[in-house]
Amino acid sequence: MLLIDTNIIINYLRGDSKATDFIEAFGKENLALSSIVEMELYNGVLNRVEYLKIKKELNDFVRLELNESIGQTALFLSKKYALSHHMSVADTLIAATALVYDLELKTYNLKDFRFIPTLKVSGDL
Image (cartoon, rainbow, N blue to C red; front, top):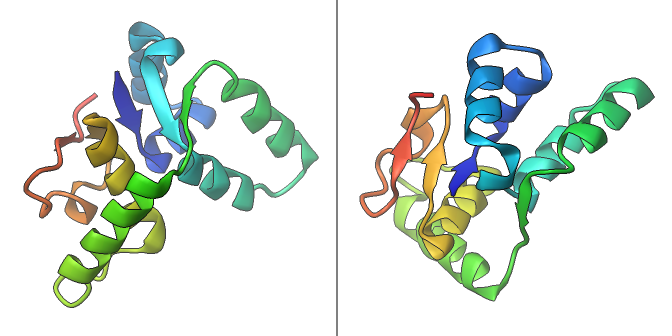
């Protein structure tokens, strides 16, 4: 199983062939989304049509909810990288989710995560 970052899901929802081919080949049931990714997607909707599309398309992905371990790991990351990398809260929680569940994170924004030595992260689809 892999954890998918928001930017890949956005490209998938926009019909990007690379993201679509990857998700269809791997299978939604083998790909996980953090509840943070879902929040980012819903916070970006512009209208009801987009909202319903997101809701429908996310149905078959595995969902990973926030828990105490993720919160503690995210706080550790925040403290460790606050001055050097200024991670966003969302990216910190997504990285913490990948670490807690020992999953590789797929993202187009490698620069946001590659400095975390214990995080398995890749951008190739």
